[in-house]
Amino acid sequence: MKKRALLSVSDKNGILEFAQALAKLEYEILSTGGTMKHLKENGVPVTAVDEVTGFPEIMEGRVKTLNPMIHGGLLAKQDDAAHQAQMTEHGIQPIHIVCVNLYPFKETILKPDVSVDDAIENIDIGGPAMLRASAKNHAYVTVIVDAADYRQVLEELQTEGQTTLDTRRRLAAKVFRHTAAYDALISGYLTDLAGEEFPEQVTFTYELKQPLRYGENPHQKAAFYSRPLGSDFSIASAEQLHGKELSYNNIQDANAAIQIVKEFNQPAAVAVKHMNPCGVGVGETVAEAFNKAYEADPVSIFGGIIALNREVDAETAEKLSGIFLEIIIAPSFTVEAIDLLTKKKNIRLLTIPFEQHTKDAWNTVSVEGGLLMQQPDTFGFADADIRIATDREPTEPEWEALKLGWAVVKHVKSNAIVVSDAQRTLGIGAGQMNRVGAANIALTQAGDRANGAALASDAFFPMDDTVGAAAKAGITAIIQPGGSVKDEDSIKKANEYGIAMVFTGVRHFKH
Image (cartoon, rainbow, N blue to C red; front, side, top):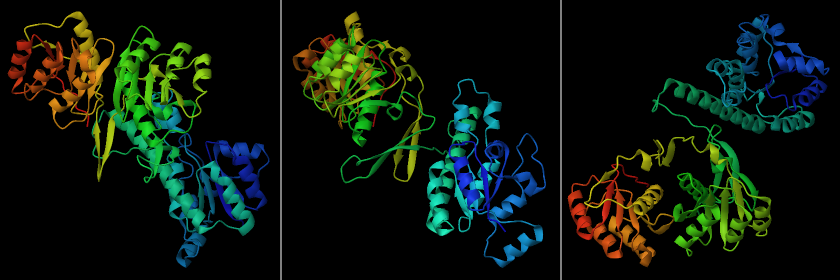
C-alpha cells in the first residue's frame, strides 16, 4: 500500500515541485479544491479527498476534510494493534505527510473595505483541525505549514526514506505556533467587533522581525518581533535605507522619538537619549526645527536618535551630518540628503509613513508573571479643561511655550519637568524621585535661558517649592495638572512672583 500525503494549501509557492517529488517517491497524493486543480493541470496524479471520504464537499466547501476517513488516518497510532484493527474495520488508511496552510484571514482583514462576512468566511476550520491532529500525532505524521520546510523534508525522505523524529517534532511545534497565532488574530478581530476592552483572556501574537546581536546589555539575548496588524507608523514597519542593523536600545529610543514628534503639526525635530527627549524644536522649516532641537542641548544630542516630521532635504542633512548620531527617522529623504548622510557608514536612516500615525494601539508592558495593558496617552492640549489659576493670564508667547512644554512633558519619565520657550525645550528634568529635584535639573540645564520661559510639569505640585525654584530662575508661566490639596499654596506663591499658572486637570505620568 502506498504511503499517503495530503496537500491543501492557499499559498501555492513551491507546492508543485514538492508534489512532483513526492510522486516520484511513490506517495499517493490527496488534495482538495484549488490545490488539486493546480496539481492536475501540471500532470501530478491526485486523488480527491471526497473519493477517500465517500462524501462530497458541502456548504460552499465549509465541510470537506472533517471526516473520520481523513482524521482517522491522521490520528491513528500506526504501531498500535487496537488502532490498526479499527482502521482495518472501517477501511481507513494512514496519512503520513500533511501539507496545509490556512485561509488568508490576516490578509483579508487588512483590506480597507473588508466586510464582516468576508472576514468570517476566511476563518479556516478544516485546515487547523488537520494541522493540529497531525501535529499531535507527529510520532507518525510529518506536518508542514511553511513552504520553507519543503526542502528539508524531501532531503530526509530521499536519503532516509522517512523524516526524523526531531524534524517531525520541530515541525509540529511550528504548527501549534502557527495555529495559535491564527486564532489570536481571529479572537482579537471578533473581540474588537464585540467592543470588549478587557476580556477574561487576551492573546497577542507577534512575528519575528529580526534576531538582535544582544539586548539592553551585551550579556542579554534579544530579538525584535512585530505585531502582524500593528500600526504602519512604527519602528517595526520602518524601512531602513542605510546603516548597520538596529540594536535593542536603538529600537526603544527610536520608538520614543517618533511618539514625541507625532505630537506636532508644524515642522518639528526631536532628539532622544535613553528614551527621554534631550531636545525638541519647531520652526518654519525642518532645518530650523533641527537647529532649535540641537541648541536645546548640544551635549546630550551626541550619539542620539533624531526624528523629524518632514522630508530631510540637503540643508537639513548638512546640519545632521555635522554631529555623531545613531539614527535619523523621517517620512522621506531627498536624493541629495541621502548622498550626504550615507557618507557616514554606520548611521541608520529610517523612513516611516507619518500619515499613518492616527492609529493608536493599546500599550502593553510585561511584568514578572503578568502583563499590563492601558490605552495610549493621547490627551493633548486641545483636550484639556484649561483653567487659569493665578491672577495673571499667560501672554500669547507664553501660551505657545506652555503648549510646547505640555506636548513634550508627557513623554518624559516621571517625575518630569520641561522648561521651554515657544520654539524649543531649554531644560528637561526626568525620572526623579521628587518633583523639585526634577525642576532643579531642568532649570539648571536651562540656565539664563529660563528667564521669561515656561515650565511644564507632568503632575501636580504637592508643595510650593517647585514654584519657588521656578520663580528664582526667571520662569514666568507654568502649566501643570492641578488637583493637589495644597494647590492654594502654589497659586499663592505664583501670584507672589507674578507667574501665570495654568491647570489642565490631567496628569501625564510615564513610568
